Image 1: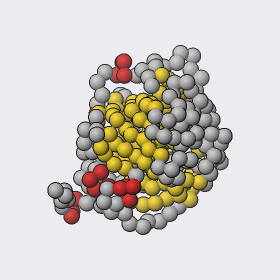
Image 2: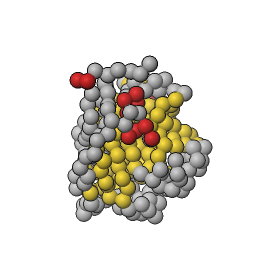
Image 3: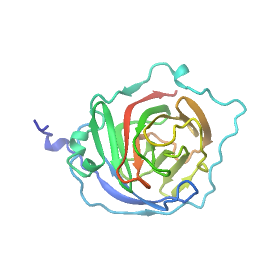
Image 4: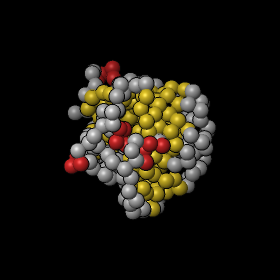
Amino acid sequence: MKKIIPLLTILLTVISCTISFPSSSSFDRDVETGVGVAFTQTALAAALPGPSATLTPSDEPQTTPTATQTPPADDPKETLGNPDWSDNLSSDKNWSLDAVNEGIGEDVFSHASGKLIASNTFNFTWLLTYLHFRDAYLEAKFEVETCSKNDQYGLMVRAKDYVDGIAYFYIVTCDGHYNLRRTTASGTVQLLDSPASDAINSGSNQTNTLGIWLDGSTIRLYANNQFLQEVKDASIDADGHFGLFINSAQTPDFTIRMDEIAYWLID
């Protein structure tokens, strides 16, 4: 039976925007279209046309990775204890897909067999939960289907709102590279130079558990319980939403499945 949502509880905030990303050897798409699928704890209705804005790359220098004498532990969970929040995705209660599927999200996001599924073709699309934090360790397990070199997916954190793309993006590609990028009102800046890592399971039909640690200006990236790199950046230092994103840079109908997600708050 179709779920009926009271009219007064429906919040519609779906807007399309265009974000200009700097090119690099591993990420060669200069301009990608971002569609923020926005929702609240209760509901999201269908899409309406909204204003568009082009963000140009900032002139500020790229943030360099921090050279730590003693690298952080490979698995933060060993010292953080039980998560403050977790979702095994047995339902879509935290993602409101019953409402999203009535709008533009029906061609991108779905839920089946205890997994959140994202599938798109040649655009950059994200889905954020109504939950939010500032300082936390966030981890999610992704199953990657057929993919090609530059197809991208990952975690989005400290998002100002659901639609404008202001946030940090922890990006992983099909060929085993990773990156951290930030988008602000000034534009998008690549914080790393797309290094490769053996910790990332590259290629099609692989599973990767991605983690990102945020504590003030300290940002640490993890893959499959292995520490990758630390970056210092204070450009986005406020409480924000989190979620996942997908970008089919090369493969039509590139598909990922998020199997579980959790966060541990950092005092």
